[in-house]
Length: 232
Ligand SMILES: Nc1ncnc2c1ncn2[C@@H]1O[C@H](COP(=O)(O)OP(=O)(O)OP(=O)(O)O)[C@@H](O)[C@H]1O
Ligand SMILES: [Mg+2]
Image 1 (cartoon, rainbow, N blue to C red):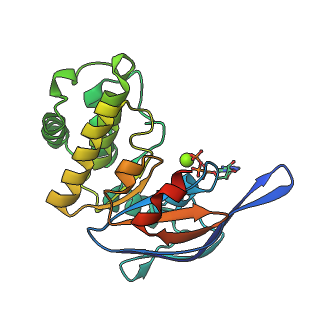
Image 2: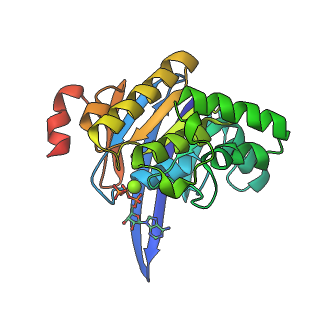
């Protein structure tokens, strides 16, 4: 479903060039679920941003199916982001002053859906996530786990093919983390949703089909039996 070939990305820290991704090759099949692990600052979020069309690579190609993504064409890129990708950000990126419901339906409103369709889809998702009783609550009164679920609902709103999740359990206690993991796995099973998760949570990583380690600019597949080495 998605193929990365020779992806490179650098940033400038003042005048100093920092090469974050030095040539990433990766293939993720439809319905596959993968985890990306690696030290802080290794470029995990950078990589997800590229796959999600939120940033442009300096070099290399990204194929969606067999079609290269044209990073120069803003219109195509926006369409790709909206129609194919659900993004769960590392720090939620919710609108604190809006209600749960408003946050969830925002992608629909921005995509020009009719209000009634937005309401229907919003209700369906919140019920599914057991969060409908909080629909009219403001984000700032919610717990971390509840916020994470709102972020998931919003990411799923437009029925993406690929879910990108950056530390989906990073800010959660064990119980909320378990619940969120269960939910993400169900989505993968029921809707054949392809998953790319960045996580430090090894029990989550081990539930994926494959684990990749991102380190020093390159990515390598990691055998499940080696996972202890990653955490240490
Ligand atoms: N927009 C940017 N401008 C400058 N430097 C950046 C930018 N985005 C990321 N970086 C740098 O690139 C490197 C990789 O950052 P990234 O956020 O991808 O790491 P990460 O693996 O997600 O880390 P963490 O586990 O802490 O979330 C870091 O050194 C960071 O400072
Ligand atoms: Mg990150």
